[in-house]
Length: 114
Image (cartoon, rainbow, N blue to C red):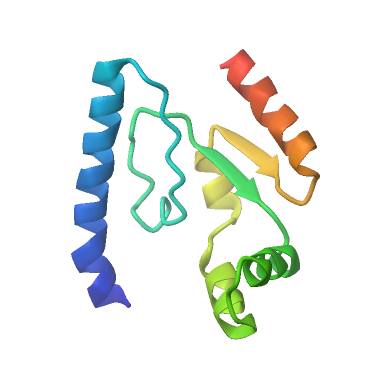
């Protein structure tokens, strides 16, 4: 996995930065859903970082509902990082165990204040 990440992550990060530049030049809004953000070293992309965290059991259930097998869902859910270091680096932390409406309201409050 590490060898694969060394190959993929730099290219992914370069492509993401290119999309961010294009969005800025065109004046359009951009939301980048980057599950591997912290694996990339939490690079400064010039965008606010919003961390949505949820308990492991809920993450697994959601991934299974999206079509992953129980094993794949558990592996993917465990690979996501939500520790104190990640929370400290985020500009906003949203409790993903709340209803989507509550999470959306939390995000809107953060964006209005930013």
